Length: 452
Image 1 (tube, helix red, strand yellow):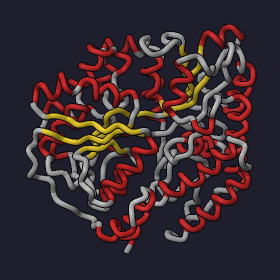
Image 2 (tube, helix red, strand yellow; image 1 turned 90 degrees about the vertical axis):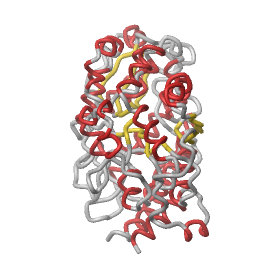
Image 3 (cartoon, one colour; image 1 turned 180 degrees about the vertical axis):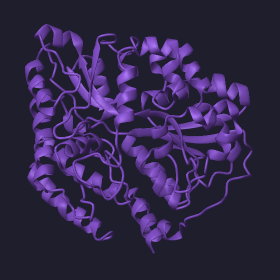
C-alpha cells in the first residue's frame, strides 16, 4: 500500500490523471533491448550547462557514435512536472532525463529507474572512483548502486559585484550572517541606476523558491517537520525565517521578484541589475563568462549566509537518469557516460571556455590547471561548500529524513510547491507570510499523518 500511495502522490503532483496512475506499476520494461539504438530522446532542465551540451552533442558524441540525440529543454518547474509525469506513469517518451538527489532514492524504491553502476563499472575511462563522494551518496539507491550519473554538482553561496562593494567601501565577510547581508543589501540598493541590492528566488516551486528559502529556514532554527513528524511550517522559527526572506526581497530585491527563479536571477546578476545574489554555486561559471556576463572577472564569492548554524549551503546534483521504460538502454547509457565524463569536461573547456565546465562532480576537475586558472575565484569555495553540506543534519534539530533544501518524501513535491505558491504571493504583496504559513501548516499536518 505504501508503494501505491507514493506512486499516486508523485504522479498527482505532476498533474497526471488518476486513470494513468491507476494503470502504472512499480516496474516497467527492462529496457535492455529493442529500439534502433541510433536515436534517443533526452529531457533536461534549461540551465546554461544543459544548453551547452545541446550545442556540442551533434559534432562530438553523435559524430563519434552515430547516435542522434533529440533534446527537449524546459524551465525547471515545467521539467519537474514533465519528467515526473513521464516516469511515474510509465509513458516511456524519454530515454534519458535530468533529475536530482530528491528523486533518485524515491524513484529507485518504486522501481522506475535503471541502475547505472554496471554501465559505469564496465567503462574504465569513466573512472567512477573519481566522482565526489557526496554526489555518489546522493545519487545511489538502497542497494548502494548508482541510479543517476552526475552532470554537475552544486551547493549554494553568495555572489556579489566587487566593483559596487569597493565603491561603497564595503567588505563582504567570507562567512556572512543573513543580517549582515540584509544590511549590505540596503546600502548597495540603487548603487547604480536601476540596480537593486540582492536577487533571491521568488518563483513558486519546491525546487525554486523552496530551495533557497529552506536553507534560510534551516539556519534560523526552523524545519518542515520534527524527527517524529510534527509539522512545523507555522512555528516561530519558520515564520521568522520566511518573514526575513520576504521582507528582504520586497525591500531590496529584484524587480518582478515573485516571478524570478534561477534563470531570471542569473540574468539580473550578469547584467548588473542586482549587486548580490544568493543561489547555486554552479552559476559562477556563467557569471565568469565574458561572452554572456558584464561582470566577468569582477565577481566576489562568500559562503552561504547563516544565522544559528555553522553552514547553510544546500547539496544538489543535476544528473542523468534512465527510466526503466526505455527501449534504447545501450545508446542511452553511452550518452550518459559521455555527458558525465572527463572527456566531455575537456570538450567544454576547449570549445566554450574552462569556466563553463559542468563541475562539482569530479575530484580531477579541480586538479586541471586550465580550470584552476579559470575558476580561481570560485573553485575552492564551491568544492568546500559541497563538502560541508550536511543533508543528514542541516539545521539545529534532528530530522525525519535527509535533505538540506527539501524533505525526502514523495509528498514534498506537492507540499513544497503549494506552500511556496503562497509565499510567492506574499512577495507579490497579495497575502501575508503568516497567513501563507498557517495555510501551509494544515497541508503539512496532512502529509505528516502518513508517517506518524
